[in-house]
Image (cartoon, rainbow, N blue to C red):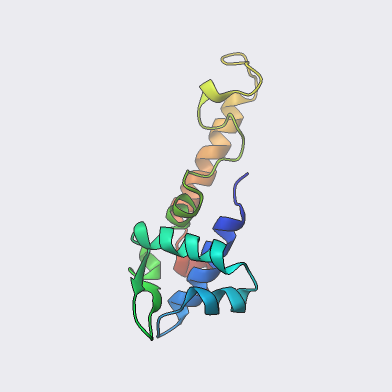
Length: 133
C-alpha cells in the first residue's frame, strides 16, 4: 500500500504546522484533526528525529518546521512516517520479493518497475509546499 494513516496524519499535521507562526502541540493537533493523540505523537517524534520538525519544550512548546516546506519532499515525509519507501506493488522494487515466485518470468515486471519509478520520481519532486494551501 502506498500510503497508510501514518503518512496521511503526517501530511495533515505538517500542513497545519507549516502554516502556523507558533509551535503546535500533539494534543491540539490531534483534537483539531480528530485523530488519536498517542499515534500522532509518535509520528511527530519520528518526523522530528528525521529533521523535518523541531520539538520545542516548555509551556508554549510543541512542534515547528525544521526546514522550509519547499525543501521537504513528500517522499521524505512518507519515508519518515512509514519507516520505508512507498511501494505500489510487492514486487515493483525488487524482483527477489516476488510474491508468486515468478522471478525472471513475470511478463508485467518491466511495467511494474517503470510504474514504481514514475511514482518515486513524482514523490521526490513534490514538496510539502506544493500540496499545502
